[in-house]
Length: 205
Ligand SMILES: [Zn+2]
Figure 1: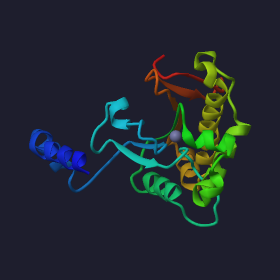
Figure 2: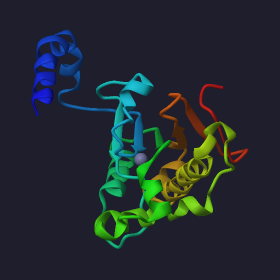
Figure 3: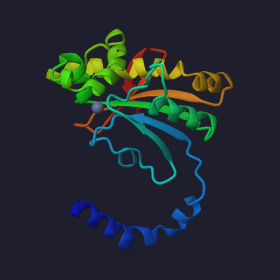
Figure 4: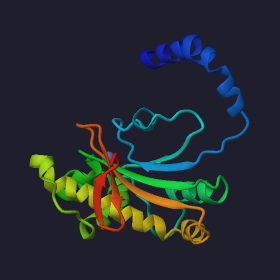
């Protein structure tokens, strides 16, 4: 814990005083433009890879960057989507998967899941990855099969996202766009799913 406490001490002493005005502006309201749905994986640091900061991204994280369809009861991700779209009125929702995702590895080999009843049930939502599997990318080398499935999961979750009532409504009203991204940890590159070609292409042209 000491590392976190020291980190906060540094924030209070060095970062906060410099950015005090920014934090004061944000103290009583927020108006983020983007809802960012990604994996809980510690290696995804949205503000670092997107150059964003306080007040910019509304974030929902869960293992496998899942957007559940129907579980019969409420879950954190769909409640967050509804709030972001209907109350905060974000303009974009981004579903972002990533290389070396443990959730997809577990979904493939199913090892150890019998001891994890909650995670196991949650990961049923990544089944959509199999029917939306993307063509393997040679650049992924030995991981090509797994990573084609991880990209497939992004496409599957994007479909689940569009099926959310609040999202469908906002898209029909022309006030919301949805995007599927894949982040490669090794190279730091982001790919986006191109709806026309149905392929992942580099985000940076
Ligand atoms: Zn992951």
